[in-house]
Structures are given as C-alpha cells and as structure tokens.
Image (tube, rainbow over all chains, first blue to last red):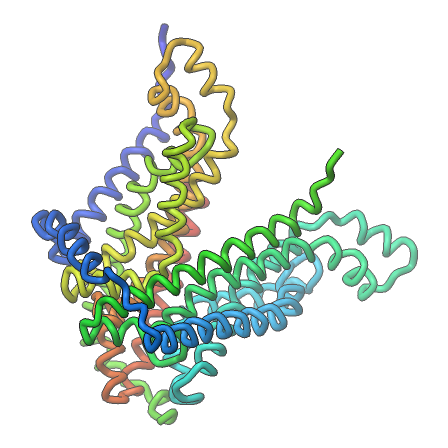
Length: 267
Length: 212
C-alpha cells in the first residue's frame, strides 16, 4: 500500500521549523554558557537545597511572621483583580469592534496591548518612586496589568456574541444602550466573570513575587530567608504559599465550573 | 526622584543593556523549547484519554499542578541558591514555568481528543504507546504549536524580571541601577524591553497565523 507523500511546501515548513528549534536552542545554550556537566550536576544541588529545608521551621514566631505576609499577598491579588475588573469592563466594550466604533476600537486595543507589555514587577518598579514601598504599589501594579489582560480577553468575548438578540431589541424599538444592557451583557457576563476569577488565580502568583522589589507580600520574606541561608524558614514560607495557592485555586476553579456549566441537575 | 525617570539616558542604555537583553531572549528561547518538549510526553500521562492507569494519572496530574502553584520568580530564587547566580538558574526556573503551563493546557486538550482513531489503531493491533503516537499525537500537534508560541511569549515577559533575583538577563541591570536610584538609566531600559517584547509578540502572532 502506498501512503501519499506530504505536499512539498508542508515538508519544507516542517524541516524549517525543526531547524529553527535546534539552531535556536544551540545558539541560546552557547550564549548562556550552559554545559552538559552543569546540567547533570543540577539535580544533586537542587536535592541538597530541598533536604536543607526539612524539617520545616514551625516555631510560633515563624508562623506569626509568615502567615500575615501570605495573607497580604492574597489581599493584594484580590484588590488588584477588583481594580482590573472594574476598569476593564467598560474598556472592553470600547475595544470590541462589533459594539464600538471601528477607529475607537483599534486605538483602545493598542492601548491595552501597551499596558499588557509591562510585567507586573516592572510596573511595580515604575510605581515605587511614586507610591513608595508597601502593598499599595503592589496592588496598583497588579491592578493595572489586569486591566490590560482582562480588557483584551473580555473584548474578545464581546466580539464573539450572537447578534440575534441585538437585532430583536433593535427591531422592537430599543436604543443602542438597551442593546448593550439587554443584548450584550447577559450573553458575556458568565464568561467574563470566570475570566475575572481566572485572573485572580494568576494575580495571586504575581502578588506573591512582588515582595522582591518591596511592593508588599510574601516575596520579600522568601528572598530574605534565602539570603540569610535560613533554609528551614524559607521552606515554611514556600509550603504556606503553596498551600494558600492550592486552596484558592481549588475554590476558584469550582466556582468557575459552576458559572460556566450551571447547576448540575439530577434526574 | 520621579524627575529623573523622565530624563532618560539613551546612549548609556544602548551600550550596557543590549547584551543583557540578548541574554534575556536566549533564556526565553531555550527555556520554552526545553519546557514544552519535556511537557509533551508528560501531558499524555496526565490525561484520562491516553492513560488508563488511575494511579499514574493522579501522580502526573498532581505533579503538574504542584509545579504550577510555585510562581516563576520563586523558582528563580530557589535555583539561584541551588546552582548559583547566573542565567542557568533563570533557564531552569523558566523550564519549570513553561512545563507547568504546557502540561496543563496540553493535557486538557488531550482529554478532549477524538478517541476514534485511537480505537482504530488498537483494533488493527497497535500497542498502547504506538496507538497514542500514531493517532493521538497528530491530533494535538496544531494545539501544541499554538501553545508553544504562547508560552514563548510568556517566557519573554517572565525572563525580563528574572535578573531582579540574580538569575540572568536584563533585570540584573535594572536591579543594580535601582540600588543607586538611577531612574534616568532605568527608564530607557524599560522602553527598550517594551519595544523588544512587542516586536517578538508581533513576530509570534505572524508565525502563528502562518503555521495554523
């Protein structure tokens, strides 16, 4: 049996991609001075670090220091997500090309792209001289970045709606505003809410690292303990952070499933 | 202090930051390639569709979930302590980061593949691994490519900040200049980073449209 050959251009593309990947990784590895013996000795070194962390430092003093810091990260993430949600919601209507003017939508999208290009930490960096050290800087950084990402995601949801309800509102004499409120919002709300929750999960991780530049949260605690070579306490910081992230992820994921799929009906 | 932020020193930034910016891009390329290709086999084990053994499924799935809970910069801090300062720690951190994301996205894609071809391959006498290789892998390859490009973009963004904890890349220069409060040197670097990130993102969008 003869299996037909792939078309020539597809084969060329395939080899081209393989070539790019191989050359790219070799070029990068040589530029970064990564040698095989460094790679092979890495697992052993990592194991030494992990075994230095156990047993964890569970003294009352350590817990009293670490838990409020982890909670602060949680607060930063929540406040940042709320900022992002409130501001991105109207902006996403401006950015969606089916409910907004064409030129306006293009400008808004570019603005959102620019906002998104700044990582939270860099934003925190720019904000530090303005708002000072502390959780306020972190919250603003997380919030501004969330406006960019949520705005993009929400506008894409709005662009994907079913136009039928809008038409029927128009034909029964509704204004443009009525169309938005009764045609668009009910259609997009479940998906957008679940994106908000999803963003909250991401922001939680982002706010955990913000402490590295002094913008509040648990990151400062981890980097300090690692600097002072207090590995058991660094281990405690890690474990508490992981536990919090896992708990929040589980709760948030189950809420998202409930929003998207609705209540399970038992027959 | 904010005045100097708007008085950028461009020549200084071009001279000192371009090498570090290149290093940042190299970290992102290497880490996203390694992470994604390690995650490719793992995600087949972390999906119910291609792994019928419940215990290994749970082990792989929770392994990927566990990796995902630790933020990228935490990985970077841990690796700088374990293998020393420098870009190697950054690469390892981003490998973990991209592996976790790819594992999650891809295993969920594998969950929803068409099981017909798999069954057909088995009916014609293929072993489980052969069946997965010939009929599940081609189904998810387009998704894999799309996710790979997406993760590459994420890695570019993430690698910018790795230097803040000493894991290589352009963040290192930002960190040292921050200590001396030279915001006039930091602001042009941030603009350069922004331009590089946007350029790479546009390239990746173009490539995605070309391939898929």
